[in-house]
Image (cartoon, rainbow, N blue to C red; front, side, top):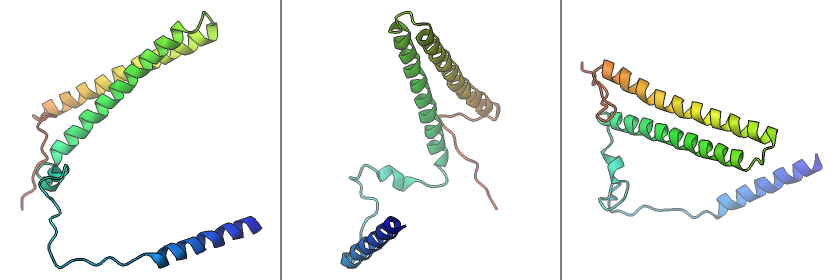
Length: 137
């Protein structure tokens, strides 16, 4: 209990000191452009409700590619484990389970991509040009 009280009092003293020594920041009278043209994130300033579908489609594509790369990594890792097992029954079984899990993961990632394509195609949409519908009054 004594250690907890000591730690809490030190944390409180540190926080008070940190906040007490913080200097004030004053804004200048000039204007600041939040979206400068030379910044690498200038594309984010063009975001609005009309192009959110592009962000969603890009995120889905990145997640599916990431899942496929991870599954392929585990497939290679299982193969390396199998080769280096030296005939040990338990190590071979572990490597086989890793390879099977990697193949299942790869198939699931590919199936997810194809299911998304089929569902979007059913509604007349495309993952490359995904746009959300606009609500009108």
